[in-house]
Length: 105
Image (cartoon, rainbow, N blue to C red; front, side, top):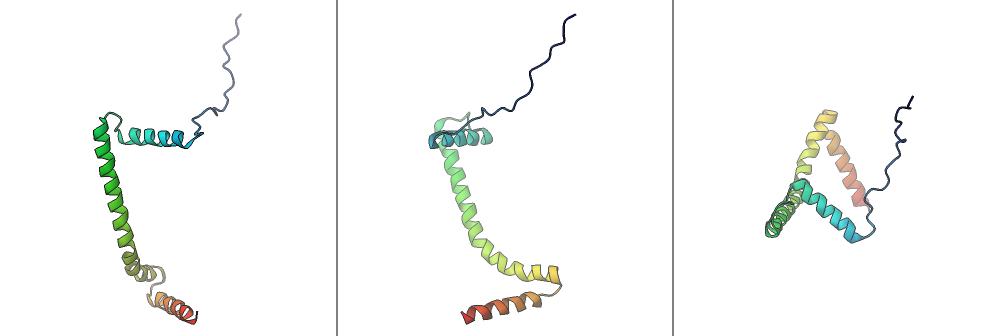
């Protein structure tokens, strides 16, 4: 009687992609970028236009974000203090103490 087939034991695969150089790492990131946005089927000039448009949109997004967030935080702090402690005066008291300690320096 023949013995049933017994598969070999499973071992952890450690032969994954290893980046031994900066160019290999850059190539891997570019390939992942192309696969994520499905631009691998575009022609080179279309890829260039896509990358320029995406870079411009990313730059505008982060520029706008860096200009809007500080002003939003100023208006958000009293509202947050009201929701957390039920009174904005707690925040005003802390801010007065912080300003007084800065003046002492």
